Length: 345
Image (cartoon, rainbow, N blue to C red):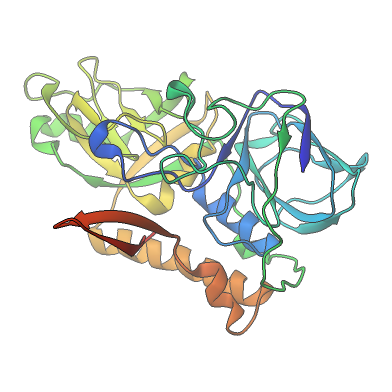
């Protein structure tokens, strides 16, 4: 059990989100920075998809009511354990009564607290993730509050070794960020000079940057005609451009459909960079090929594999990297069958 002493500016419980209800208009939600979240889980011996506490701009303070192991990854929030500074990107064993305090983000924007066994809130529609706009998931569908008590899962069966991550696994969070993008699906609705502006200039992260999307400001991206389209599917990473020519990058809590033309999509392997951006940071979009996007994903997954092997070793590595599975019940000709579906992350 964890007791929340102070919740921070915006701290929520997140896992890798829910995707079976997009057709019904329910956003996926989930962690904004999957890389930091997954690394924190691996350091604790958890599966990649275990629920964590996501803290935005400023961390909270927490008292642990039972022994466990923790790891903090993501934006630098100067964590202190029992008033002594501790490192991020490293696992620590916690005793009952220990108090963890995190401050303002000195670099980056979001940090993730993983606990051995994961955060054990109820699964709602296939996920523990909090979607505050609909009061779904987490604790009552809301951000954490003082005096909340958070249950922890069973200690993971995998015996993990405490390690110091090599610096090659620890990202930096600069104020100027490059994001690789694939053009489309509606890049044909923009003038050539609009596309040129999109990929040749920098855009400022405005104050309107949250879990739903990041509004950017810079040279207008000119449409060939109207900005509006017949609403179609929308997903995280999509770059919408409304009539004012200022791009909006969709994030974890974005809606499932949108009616503005989408000039490009930020590749999945780079979305964590934007999730760590703060207002006044600068964004540069860089065109890449589909092969480059796939290779970036392969390289990201290889990092998880290497860390899992270090902390677990041997066959136990597969237990940490195994994709999350969920069960569904289907009825065919009045006969009920239980089936397992494996998610490909």
